[in-house]
Image (cartoon, rainbow, N blue to C red; front, side, top):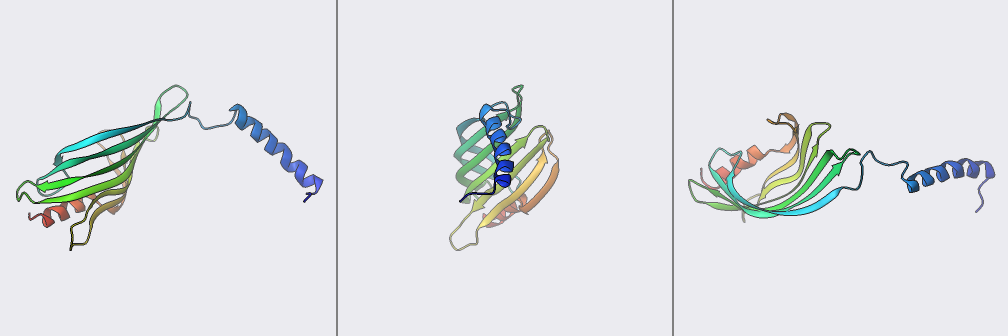
Length: 168
């Protein structure tokens, strides 16, 4: 099919300029290069919080880390996709339940924000409804972190439900 010449000539020139610019690298993101990507295994063995009882967490998982830098080599964005599985033990009753997580944490250094979203925690016990902490949490990236916004089921509510489930 042939297009009228005035339409095709108006489209060909801008498309050719954009294609040339993209090919030569003249137009692109403000990042210096492709991200540095690593996968890091980790273990869990320590106190768990926030919770109104004393919980101990064990387990392990992986972090898929993407690090983006600007033209000067400064890290501007750090994204970590975390997947883990483990157990939570109530230190008073010694009751243990499984827990898993699958979430992403993005640190945006120029914006000074840390955003976590996804399935932060989940415990499934036969005969019980699942207990979850899921949603989106945005805090300042500087210490101590200050809450900017939060939606979904909180980690504090999850911890309280685990304490109730395990007997305290």
